[in-house]
Length: 423
Ligand SMILES: NC(=O)c1ccc[n+]([C@@H]2O[C@H](COP(=O)([O-])OP(=O)(O)OC[C@H]3O[C@@H](n4cnc5c(N)ncnc54)[C@H](O)[C@@H]3O)[C@@H](O)[C@H]2O)c1
Image: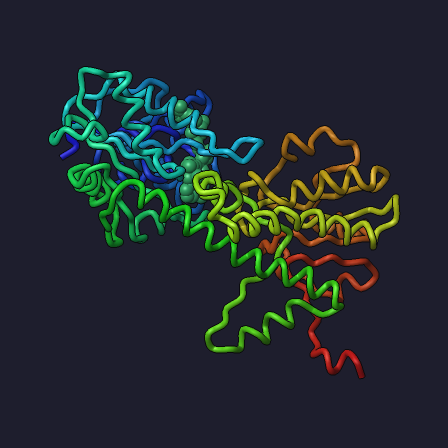
């Protein structure tokens, strides 16, 4: 099975761990990326992203000879597409990477091959992959053509891994495998049975696409509820952390924590794919996105109200979530950009222990620099806590008593009960 190996197109946060997980099982994997630097690094056994245990797995598989990277797609028995699926400026899905990846594998496909779309995708994308391949290879029959047996098997298998735990979850999580036909699902499931210990559940491709989008929209709507509570409690001069803690004592209530906004390129993007597919029906999902997108502006307004025009502001955290180096779609970056525009004479000292350079959108700004935690805290008039990194866990309100503090993560929440604070 898969004697001619497996090709994984796109060697980022999903494609590289997937390649390593399969190659570690002794199956030959060729990873493809359009970025020469990524390919070269991997062939040296190096990992261009920070993810626990990924470096060991990649270095081991490269040394064993089961993993290699290249920019040219070779022939293989299975092809997994793990390329970006962003939304464009108008929030419409941008499928150009998926189309390019499908067209890049089309010339080498042969009867019996399986093509799996791993990228998070709007409903109907797997079928479009099948159509794009059919257009490039009229000599092959594809499953969307609906003529019984087909030469190529096409399926969608969405990823649910949590950055920071990818190497564990890629093996342990249950997987949805959605085929355009049942035969497609069954053939694709054989790929996952190589390295997955979770349950492999078969469905059709569009249901699998939608299920993944629903998972992330569920998270987004629940975060929006918490963020809306933060705005309401701010308006009513109540401590939102206290209110949520107390409400969560109800046995069937579990409210999430508010924050500075929703980042990453999953939860902040995927709900828009549902809105684009069913705009009239997606009212809560759209509103949740708007509430979460408005949070950075509320955090900036609060910070500006506490700062002076020439304040030094320590910004703790730039990543989109705790303990990762991923700055993509990070609300913290947007907050620093907005603060720099609102307070052009302020000095912004960004503390981000997981990176050693500012991202491009901040790098050219005179008033923004990276600083170690101690330096930033010593210099700051205002401390803005944006990410609950482990490195900030030991901070207490007492450490910051002579400073103005905006704590968007509730890390420094007041130690006392509101009754004691009123007496
Ligand atoms: N990162 C996550 O935690 C996560 C979780 C679940 C699902 N996903 C989904 O997985 C997909 C991939 O996400 P990611 O985080 O791995 O992205 P990424 O940006 O980390 O990696 C994508 C890689 O694909 C490469 N690439 C782009 N076009 C290519 C092409 N035509 N041929 C070859 N390589 C190409 C890029 O150079 C890049 O290295 C997205 O749809 C994303 O929504 C990501």
